[in-house]
Length: 112
Image (cartoon, rainbow, N blue to C red; front, side):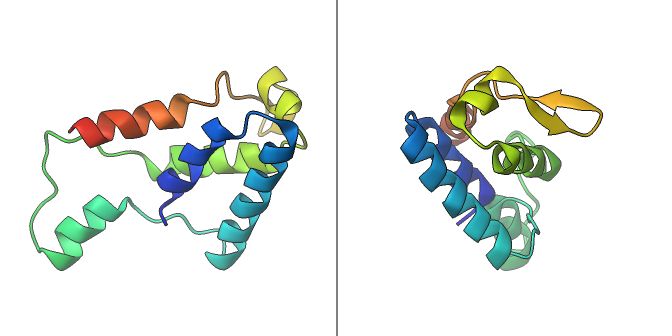
């Protein structure tokens, strides 16, 4: 499972209980991967399996942005805290304005 596929499920975590379940899945994924987030599977398939360059017309998702989203979600103790922006992050506070942002990115990628 890719980080992007994992983060898409955040949109389904509308209740506090579902958010806590989502956080547990995210924690497990981070533990199993030793905190590493690799490039998208599409890129790896093109370069390592098919031995062809990744198509320039398809936007690549930055791994650092996915890592940052995962870290902010992991630090949030509740869905309310995540939405209100009370999560200590680097030199300030972080929040996610909406939980469907990642789902929208995936929809755009699938259209490509």
